[in-house]
Figure 1 (spheres, rainbow, N blue to C red):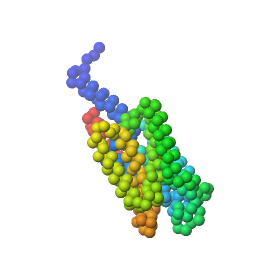
Figure 2: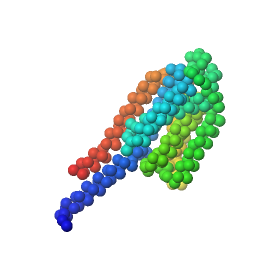
Figure 3: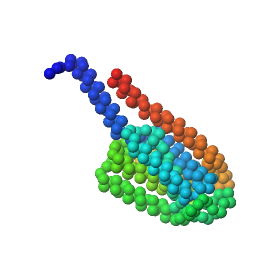
Figure 4: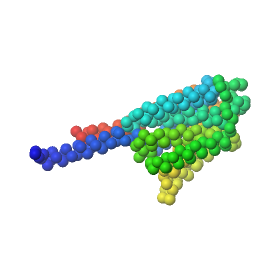
Length: 297
């Protein structure tokens, strides 16, 4: 039996531990850390989801039905890429967030709206092929989506898996997470459209109200009795109506209280911002891996 010198043995142990830690990080970490940058990217993605969803369904006049089918297919494709990835990739993760925001926009519109002229722009009498919308209305649509979201969380709770996203490491846990994200983004769109269209607050007023509630949630993070996981999910749902009202504020006509910047131009600018933020997040993810590599050498 051969014996390594003490210095070589210690060095071998350190390298083994570093390599194992790096391997666990590569394999297990599929979701990001929740930081200020996370929330900035979430708001940018949800605002882009609103403007891009309206671009396809309204500006390009594909209608809510066809756009919902197309964007849901995009969501499925991006989700498969994310689920098959062996580690956290900011581009994969935030592409799925964006696709859930776009699909959630048109799913909410299809559920809640109808063929009446107030939902059609440019004097159009119809919008795309197929049914114009189910006309359920924002309160009933929100109640249905809240019920679905509660069921998802109940199933999630029964599985015994964690709600803390940085600790989600299984396929089943990630599937539940993305199901909750899709429904919460659809619910958030309904809430945002209700604030903008039906509450009398307008686009800017709705955004200010949601922003105020989010500020309260931030303050509650300092209260030990309030679980941070609960605050996270409330904030995650509420950033969607913030994005919806902000997106409407950017794109809707001045006569309706918007800035009339258009869905195409607003979407292009927001996409550039989001891609820049994803590049920044990707660069930050590479630093720890490079540090581990230098340590191992």
